[in-house]
Amino acid sequence: MDNLKNIKWGFKMNIKINARKKLKFLLPVLFSTLFVGTASAELTERPADPIKTELLEEGKKVYFKRCVWCHGVEGAGDGPSHDRLWTKPRNFTQGTFKIRWTNSGDLPRDEDLIKTLTHGLTGSAMPAWGDFLKKQEIEAVVQFVKSLVQDRDWSDEDEVITDMVSDLGENPWGAKEPYYEGIPQVDIDAGRELMVKNKCFECHGADGRGDGNPTMKDDWGFPIHAANWQQCWNFRGARRDHYNPFNVARTISTGLNGTPMPNYADKTTVEERWQIAAFVNSLCPRKKIDKLTNKPVPDFLISAEYTDGEIIPKIDDPMWVSPDDSPKIIDRAEDKLRNPRRNYIALAGQITRGERNFKPKSDNIWVSARWNKEQGLFYLLEYDLRFLSTDPEYPDGVAIQWPAKLQDLFGAEKPYFIYGDSKKPVDIWKASFLAKNYKSTYDIKPNEKTPFELDISTQELLGYGFDAVEEKDYEGQVKVVDSTFDRGRVKIMLQRALTTDGEFDVQIPSEKFIPVSFMQWSGEDKEKAEHMAISTWYYTILKPPVDEKHMWTMSFMMGGIFVGLQGWLVWMTNRTRKMYADGKVVQDERPF
Image 1 (cartoon, rainbow, N blue to C red):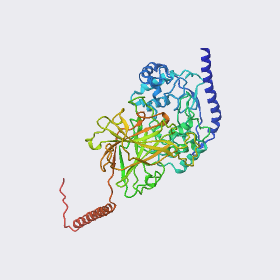
Image 2 (cartoon, rainbow, N blue to C red):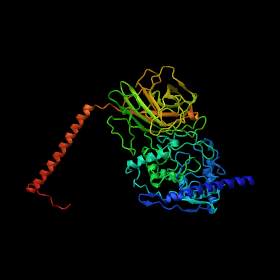
Image 3 (cartoon, rainbow, N blue to C red):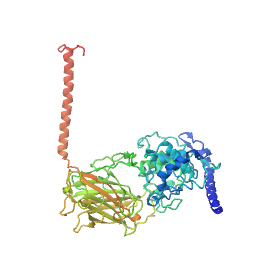
Image 4 (tube, rainbow, N blue to C red):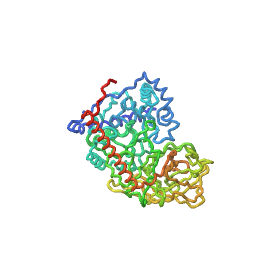
């Protein structure tokens, strides 16, 4: 027991000494920093918030009803669900909390913990408990969680905390949500230069998709990944304010305790932290956020754009530079080619069969489509995947799933969304791939593209349910016409004729709503068969051809009718006024 006490005492003192060293160096730097003509606020120490013992009993009841299943009886992050979750539940015993306003190594404020419970940690299994618990219950369980810390004493006079972000204030541009208007491009560009200068890309990747370092671990030895800046709705500290650049500036100021993410307050000025935040914020596409899931609202209808002329089967061709339904902070190219929209599709872990999987590494996929009668249907599938598999037994994969007997479905009927069922089979177009000459620790060049060519194969599968999925016994017609992996982004383009002779091939009509769903396998996580990420059923529709000649004729006709009608109304108004002025019409002055 004495040895255990000595270990705990040594761990505690080490944290304090490191924090003091950082603070000793940090204070003179920040004291001298100027931001928008105003000196930064002086950093001050104050005692940590002591445990409110009168709330412990109520907090204990809440904890053992709601929290114990992930965080464990003693708060060690070893609850019954912990081994099925990505990321791992927080171990409270060492007093290490990631999302704070306080300095690296400091304990959090009560307010920090209350906000974490209230808003949850997006991108993890930690829900927003403010939707389920009363305010007083959250305040009470925070006090109980603090009591689970074994290695530090909240009442110790040496346990001081330093507010690291009070001097950040509001963003210097006065920009409001959705934060893509009013932020100067010069600050975004400066933020990118600072990202390169501080070598943020070594962990977060050249385009910020978290694909820089595959070997990172937290303080407990669990594998972790750097944040994907292009999916800001998955930032742990988003606090349900996903597009606010303050979230980034705060993290740069405080670091993330328990992870390799350090405190950069001693290396950057306040102005520079906001500039980095502006750059990171510019990478995330604006989508309407679902308040229940804290994720973007999916685009449930995928419109395939009709193309009059040849469809170029090249991902980097201008006709595939597709806009989202909302702008980014950067200007988009003018859409002169009637480019298809990139649709956001939500994916979730497949948990109903075999090994229960709550941790898909991709939780969304972007889909755009074109078609014509001569070449058929083209689908461009894009999704972020930090690292690829190098194991031929477990290749990465992505698939589109259709009702195989679409013509036999009545009304809103659809097959079971995971491999169909015994009465309603599904037609699955699957692409499996490995990257040629791939190394997950490749030399990242922030200003150069480094695409990997994919060794890719296609399968057409027929599914009657979990235990009845097999390759079709006739030659398929689905082709992968282009593919690439670059900077954590997979892009695969599939093509197939609208109709075929195959008995179980989906026959694709135009101008009708067709059920469609998507699957994704991460080979790095040994995913195969039913172990995957999957979407529910969405709908796609082939937009009809547009007769440009008649469209312009109709436009001129409608314009002429509108102008003529307006002219007639003006003439009638002037004529009526003249008749009143000439006394030809007497105004009715009777009361109502």
